[in-house]
Image 1 (cartoon, helix red, strand yellow):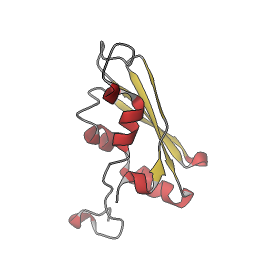
Image 2 (image 1 turned 135 degrees about the horizontal axis):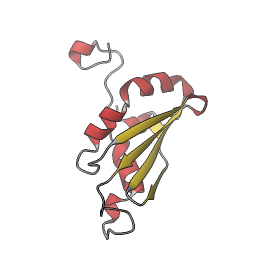
Image 3 (image 1 turned 135 degrees about the vertical axis):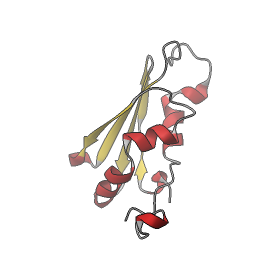
Length: 112
């Protein structure tokens, strides 16, 4: 299962910052998403696109979380000719994150 199966995303860019939301389709999945879609998991998943810090902000009343990711100075949205580095492409890449199976124990790749 990928993140795309449980959530959709909105995104934006400002200078060297990328902003991607993850919004659960079903609010009942939000607790699971909070557990597995952490800032560290997002940073690891997007390691080829994001080289700076990743901060996660939770919006439980919306069943959503927001990730703010930093790119290195000189790699801003306004200074690149590569469309692949823009927030919309990054949010699409984020939704390809493979999620652990909820039914498996942690020792077998689940969440326990």
